[in-house]
Image: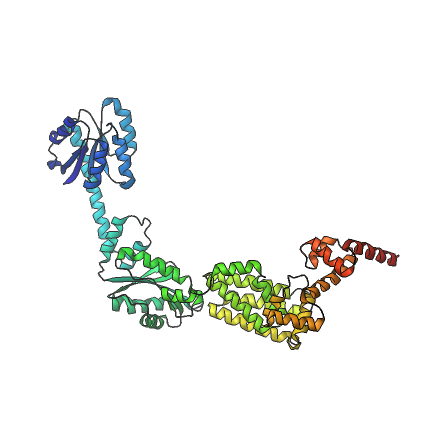
Length: 527
């Protein structure tokens, strides 16, 4: 029997509808009535009738109001509306809104029977369609059922999800998702993948009752187990044996108690797999391994440091320019800490390394010296290494090796004393934001101690020496006729007034006066 709810504010109408036809013979049963729209809405939620007969006009909540409220939660509910002749146009608009039909008051027995039989036929067709769908779902391969459960277009459709779970027919205290990313040689990868899937099927589906499914470009495994300990050496050994020549990474989502919670395990496994670039081939990444890798460092601290000091690309350039292996190692360690602290994915890591290396190598290769040409060649090699590395470990190793080779090929300069290297560095980089603390870090000295050594060797404090080098270069540029603000920027002073005071201090005249005098002498000499 299909359940019926009658909602009308007139008791005679409600009672008349109860007795006007033999509801049982038509396949219906009146389970309750309501005297207004609010009461009808409450009873609808409790009874969930198959058919609701509702008066179109009632005090307070009208029949159309009730229907609209129900439609927000139940798009398939069936309604017959009651209306008088004066409300006929109103009733027609209601039909357009999705009701199953309407009845004019006073209700005619024949019309009511016609409507009931029409609605009954409609309900029967829907019931048969649901049964057919359930049979079809039960006949689907289990992999397809898992995929539909995980990638359901409407994850809020709990009824459909329950049916998928029932169709799977699994019963275990624990379930979890494992995702696999595998790759091999370009020529044989397709064949290797097919072998891999077959071995997984034999090892997991046929032996353990697990389910192998597709998850986009990845292979998915639904593990069905009697306990929660599934991400250890046993799983890794099984996957390694199945992979053969393929390289692979696996991620292991958390165990869940019910298949309806499976999407949570899948989402976590997907998140973990994004970090596969940081793990070696054959790794099984679970939440513990992920947290252990990314536990150190703080991205906010790194950001605040980078705002006050030079960018990593500049620091790497300085380290290479003074030919210091130790300084290069320190900068690369900072770059690694930044990548880990920010939990970068593969694309972000490659991008950050490419940007930092390009900044350093671009500065190093500017000019026409043999060292600059060598730097240009290594710039291309480094970018190729960054883009082709199969793991973060391989990327780091290759970059370290390249920089070691580059410093060796520069030759000679690293045999000079630290102080001579500092002086050469200042003369080459006078326009940079040079700080004694940075050079001390590069050379591995305490900044106070290095400052004393520099003063004893040159007779000048570090900052004064830098200013004098800049002023000497400024004199050359002013003599060429460049404007004062252009010269200030070129020699490393962002503030023209500050440049003016430094120039006057060391030369005894203003930059503009020096420019006029030097330029005039030059023109006089030419004539």
